[in-house]
Image (cartoon, rainbow, N blue to C red):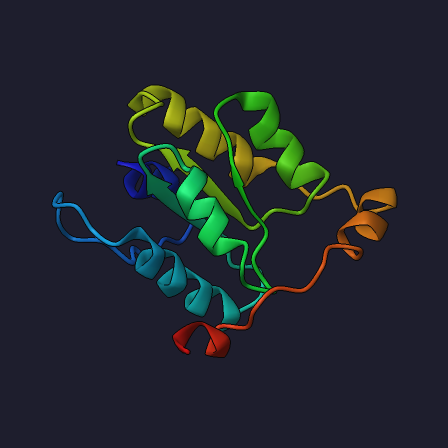
Amino acid sequence: MLAEAARTWGFEVEDLGPDTSDSIDYPLQAQRLASRLAAGDGVMGVLVCGTGIGMSMVANRFTHVRAAAVSDDFTAQATRAHNNANVICLGARTLGPGLAKQLLKTFLSTEFEGGRHQRRVDLFPAGASVKDSSS
């Protein structure tokens, strides 16, 4: 549903799965996205778990990922504009499909403001690289 919506808004989408509605080990899915993000500039991602919180915790362990769990339009906008987030994390159990699509649209259409915000983003501590995650 989210991938289809992003395509209709003109975004190129690469769906990394999962391809099942069965329970999965969400940290592995976050690692998969982190690996993909390491491969290219300008790439953004979407992670979904029950609340969005677990995915954001795993994703933020990687240096090049700035992930935010959001549940309202203001935080979806602010995390892009002020934190230059490149991953939005959404809760399948906490958001309805309409709100999830709206949050994704806001996130994808908001530009990073730079300036004083860049200075602050530069102060974020480094996390693990994708290579470190396998040990």
